[in-house]
Length: 302
Length: 267
Image 1 (cartoon, rainbow over the protein chains, first blue to last red):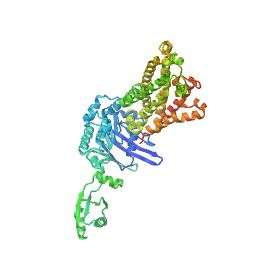
Image 2: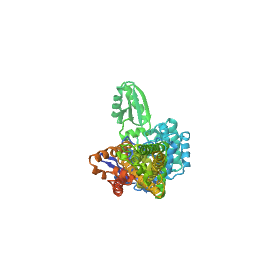
Image 3: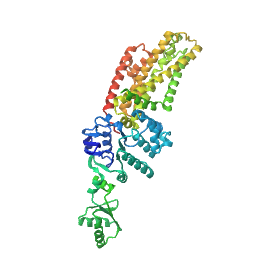
Image 4: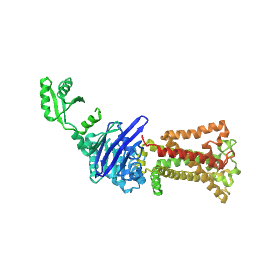
């Protein structure tokens, strides 16, 4: 039986304005990296806050590392988290900010210097937090989340504000943690980044889980598609009609036609376009990717 | 339980001890202590009085065992307002900076968290009290000779007892003001709003209400806390001020604790 780091069942949070999260069900196995995606306002942060005991669910149940979310004191010492970006005291240094949290959690102070080194802030640890760039603040937030040497790491948009090099470093850091048995539950808008590191995925839309499981299972369910562009912009609509007439789902996004169908059908489409007097400037068969699947499943526009 | 509270205390103290806050606050405490003590002695012969609201504090009164702490006890209100600002800002900033979510992930016991935070701020209040006592008694002693005020009784047995009593009373008063600040911080979740409302109430509303109807002064919370610092007044007894303040502060603490423990930590 697979050991679970997170398991929620019918987890819900209702406000006066409606459900922020409605009967969410998902499981995250121990030692995996699980992406947590959804459009803005889908309920990601509310879910994370419920998992961390910051807000009370109005329905359902959940377990973190085998302990009920009704009793966060039992599991939070083993959980590291960065929620809705880094939040620290501007007048304290990065090092002092971490020491506040280390004191609170009863963690050894030597860990602060180690973590500053690990996230690349060793030379700025004594500088005041208010002087940090967005990327440095983000790194400090990640260091704070790593303070307890967590078995479960929950990160909300950890790569915000980081440059490509920083993003790569975080990717390597998360992979290293997962290899050592830490479960990483990470939300991000950088879907291509999540695709690179995640084995599992939980996708939310309007407070409801639309997919939860292995990322490969998600791709297996998706059809390949092709990206098509035409010399004459007005011909895009005609291409869509040709594809639909041939029984393929198609739509235009970002000025490019997205047509579902196997790569082998590309030749037929090219022939049909030529016969209709349409000049194609792009015809690229694509395998399903997370970004495409996300927009498909959430109905979001880029 | 005790270990957790000790950790919360240590974490909170790291924030309170930062030089800008600690030295800035103690600077303000020192300024008011020097100001009030100096005015008390330098204006001793002024026909307009040398005490609060034009009251005359004579050489004879200042020569009593309570003379050393006369100025210190009358600073109580000002120290209280400083404590209210510090406690309110330290509490409300956790909401406005968003740091409360980090803190509660590391210490999910919310009642313990409040107890540890309050304990740390109590130590801050003790330091404020001691600094103010040393400065105001020191300034009083330095100026007494030049104004022909006898200090013979200030440090004898009765004098030391008076100093101890006044230290305790001023500390209780400062703590009461501070707790009100903390409660406002939890209720309003904004440093500016909680400080503004607290200071507005204590400095303006209570004074206006008291001036319009003097009998209300017996019931106004800020006036009760100020009366504790002076050890009672002609119109309000020490016991009345202490018990009524206890009721006000206790009720405010209960409301704030219930809110703090039950309220979601959202945005």
